[in-house]
Length: 88
Image (cartoon, rainbow, N blue to C red; front, side, top):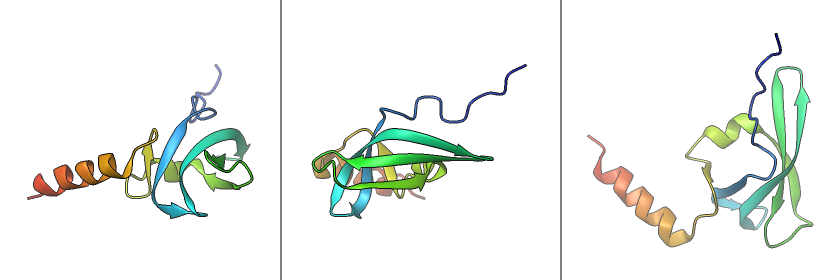
């Protein structure tokens, strides 16, 4: 029986960094690399294709670092304020 692939829809996915990363916030995954039990994603800045870097795909699950899709600063601030209002 074949093993289930981790992060099957990684390539082509779009992400917003919570902090400016290499001068940009919006990135797209253009490649993936499996190395043992680790999966790496090659990220490319949406506005500058010369900005490229690899990161452990597990980091994309950390909402304090990345959000799925391309979010505007206003959308990010709205989500942050909603999350703050629900903290107990």
